[in-house]
Image (cartoon, rainbow, N blue to C red; front, side, top):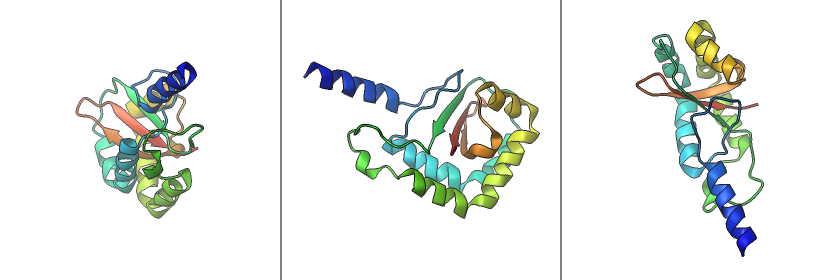
Length: 139
């Protein structure tokens, strides 16, 4: 019983995306999957916002290519990595536009480099009002 509690606590801890300062990535939760799909589909329109970013106080990285190694409560509604890849392929033009914008802005380019993220792996982004980024990547 204690082992299951520790595994459950570990699973809950790993499933929460955090603003991080190292290249650690969080797993995808059901709520994140909705945000990820929206970010992928709006990648092209978010590219225009990237040029206005003057500072990036924090960066969160969600690697959509990770599968689950243990079951999470309610994880049956989380798309597989292949479904995220398909969405990114369907919006490849928007994704490329976003990747170019991230590379063109020296502030976002440095933020990606500091977190070990290649712009070419970014398929979507959430941008907060203070310039913080949540990057959705496929590696």
